Amino acid sequence: MLDDLKMIHERDAQDALGIAEKAWQQLQYEFDVQQGPVDAENIVYAGMGGSALAAQMSLTWPGYDRPFEIVRNYDIPAYVSSKTFFVASSYSGNTEETLSATLQAAEKGAQIAVIASGGKLADLAKEKGYPLATLPAGLQPRHAVFYNFRVLIVLLQKAGLLTKDEAELAKAAEFLKGKVQAWLPTVPTKDNQAKQIAQECIGKSVVVYGGPKMYPAAYKWKISFNENAKQIAWVNQFPEFNHNEFLGWTKQPVNKPYTVIDLRSNLEHERVQKRFEVTEKLLSGMRPAPIIVQGEGESILEQLLLTILLGDFVTLYTALLNGINPTPVDLIEKFKKVLAD
Image (cartoon, rainbow, N blue to C red; front, top):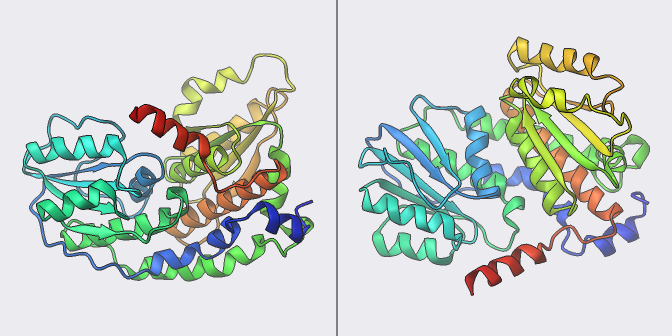
């Protein structure tokens, strides 16, 4: 079925697969951000869903030399002060949790910068004179994660809070450009890793695992299964998994209705790598054998970004196998309207 290009074109009406193919270009987008140096002891990033994911990714690369906290909530940490660099991120600009957190940060005198494509958050930035990074509009937030990731790096560099060279990001973009060709719709299933994994996920709940460095990719797979494929998925992280959830797999029946996916990297801590191997051995016969996705690339940045993109293709193909258009999120939109009443 996934080799039927006519079916793919009909079901993928908004060309989500085409967006995934060109996602590497988002890492090269030139943002005009009027951000100057700041004096900050800590960084707080407010965002939800896909908007929060860019910050999660940045914990793997480039990492930080001062406290960095992600707020997925209406309220901010009590320590936020004039010594806090506060980044408010909402693709639509209307995320109510992020707006609430931003107003609280303003009351605390935090140094605020905004990432949005428009909406109330962008209006607030213009009114108050906060630095504003404007995201290209017209996409679903989960499809604009690389835009968000790049502009966060740009913001923090201009603020004097990062010293990483952007050349590594540009190199990673070129790496992705070549690699995604293997997952395109024109590549038959027998040669297409993304299509093969999608076929293993139909009709099952998906559980995705990653180590600390690959966890952002695992979380993005979870988001994409939920929003692209409209299919339930869960996520967890090693080594925490071995301290509790590990035992949850030992209960009968053996034939559990799950697909297990391990996102592994040779750049994780050596003990984390061993945990994956020992876990697979000890749980053999107690859970479905995991689909192992081994990170490819010379750097952790390349491995992280490529694994995220593979998840996008897998979940888009899963949506097509489910007989649905992967782009709309009608129930989320309905929820927002009902919540606003």
